Image (cartoon, rainbow over the protein chains, first blue to last red):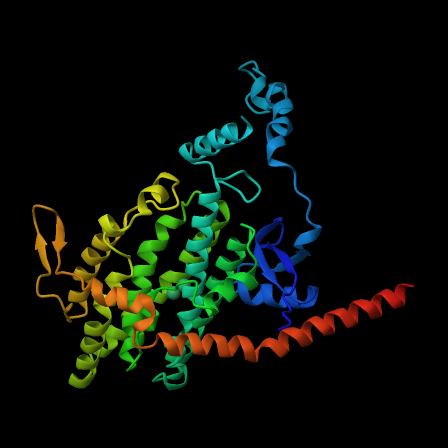
Length: 95
Length: 315
Ligand SMILES: [Fe+2]
Ligand SMILES: [Fe+2]
């Protein structure tokens, strides 16, 4: 018996004007238009979003979890990238 | 050596409440346990639409009908969130649905009971969704990221399900004598199956310890059941109805309600396929899937055609 499993899509939703699109979940659909329609029915039934992006899951490339430490390590020893690194004289109230 | 380190990192993450994500290393048994639990959960949401769907056309008012449609639509969404989350564990939707239709996967046995009157829709919302919420809230903190995120979404939507059920029962209970009787009758039939939803007693539940260690589960079956009974025993008073358990009684020492013996024989019977509606539910699912085959096929063919046309236009 032939089966027709539609490809998997990742759904990203912008909840409000001015905010980023955020990953909401995934779903199956035959094409992009259907993926958007399904995403609207499934992920925005309670005004959760004003804009939807869909990307076919196979096009998403992810970093390797085993390399996570090497991604974050270089940042760890550069505390001078954060404003809290600097002690300001008391006279400076706001900076 | 490699596997040992990976195992250690995994357990370390669990103990520090760091979520396990799809690409992370995980023990095979963890993956299997999650696939079983999440797919069962997804199947339950989908099969759970059937007993309520039975009353959509006969809801007593347009308002009740719109509410019931919205609730049943939510359950379809819950099934989808959970199937998607399970798919991150390297099992396809097709495989999961195949397992359900072949009778190899289970779903919550509660949905094998019939919905005889409108009051049953109230009892399902109050008790069945209520029990589901009790189970699901701790799952929002489950160690597997995609499952926890799906559960957060689901729990947000569930709270209206329980309230609309309570509202139906409250309205009936304050209606005519016949309506009040109908509400009581529904509670009488749904109460025991509802408290069976938490699963076997802890001493008869061999997987509980491992699931708790892995923080898939946060409370045992008996703990959740007791919590649920304590809550319902109070709420039923507001309904001015009763729960069908002569042994139900506040125990001041335990600070919990005592309750009567659960008929586990009935539970096993229904789980093993001999409940009042097991066959009807499975037949309905299989029929729906078969009758949808041409739609899936046509949509795939249409998408392919559009793609080819676009490629030609570019060339
Ligand atoms: Fe649900
Ligand atoms: Fe629900």
